[in-house]
Amino acid sequence: MLRLESVYLRLKNGSEEVPILENINLDLEDNKFYALTGPNGGGKTSLAKVIMGIYKNDEGRIYLDGKDITDFSITERAKAGISYAFQNPPRFKGLKIKDLLKISADENSLRAILRSVGLCPQDYLDRECDSGLSGGEMKRIELASVLARPSRLVIYDEPEAGVDLWSFENLLQLIRNYHKRGNVTSVVITHHERVLSLADEIILLVDGKIADRGSRDKILPLIQEDARCCWKANCGGNNDEVECY
Ligand SMILES: Nc1ncnc2c1ncn2[C@@H]1O[C@H](COP(=O)(O)OP(=O)(O)OP(=O)(O)O)[C@@H](O)[C@H]1O
Image (tube, rainbow, N blue to C red):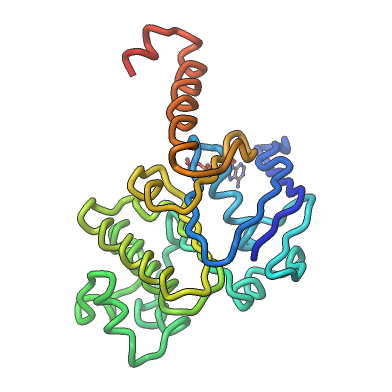
């Protein structure tokens, strides 16, 4: 359903352009549940932003259901059925939660949507989406707005970030239920073993490149090995410190 062909992304770091994604070739199938994982700074969020159109890839093409969407804007991609739940959802001072939700949901369903993410409607509908909300509350509200609309492809960027374990299990169930409704491909960017264990397939992104993909049994040992290697590099190759970790 989604195909990336030879995608490259470079971003400015000061006056210098640095490679962030290199030669990404990726096929995602209909109705599959993917986990996208890898070390910090590996490029997962950047890849999600390229797919959503927030970052424009420098080279390569992107296809959705066979249609070339490389030059589509964010809005056009959203209309085509791509949704992205941010790692750190943006805040909108002056925008009430009910007005944010109305962008994707019917007015009559707002209360049920908020309840589904564990928030009491009367406490939240009239609050603003500003810094007064905790990180976990904002993640839930964003998830609510994503799950309220039909999508062909949803990318959830670290849904576990800032959410307590009890709530995370419930949010994960919501993500699974939305997936099970069918006709949607789900990609969860995660470092969480619980999500990795639920995925049909794990994609491993390291240093801006797809290092591997496959089943949990194939990929988990690679992640553990990779974590050791990264730590070794950061410690200047001191094996004693690797053991401490
Ligand atoms: N706007 C930007 N300008 C310059 N560099 C950026 C920008 N956004 C991301 N980067 C760099 O791109 C690299 C990949 O970042 P990205 O956030 O995609 O990684 P990630 O795999 O999602 O990391 P994490 O697991 O920590 O969330 C990092 O080195 C980061 O510093």
